[in-house]
Image (tube, rainbow, N blue to C red; front, side, top):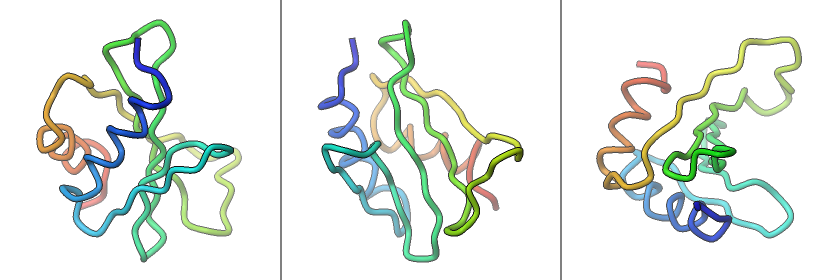
Length: 95
């Protein structure tokens, strides 16, 4: 099963291969990948799918996103960070 520590490790490995993103890992918050321009990705485990992680694109600062569409993908945690980053760029981030 993918636990909190494994999600943190995944985010830390993804940050260097996702252009401009850094991992923000604190005990009392979700695991984030953030960029200076306000782009934000949240990394979660997928309930009852231990081989998957959910990557959710956050809305810019100041916009809670209530009532707005949710943009997310799931990825296989066994893949390399480079492959996961390619999936994120292709399937989730704007061109």
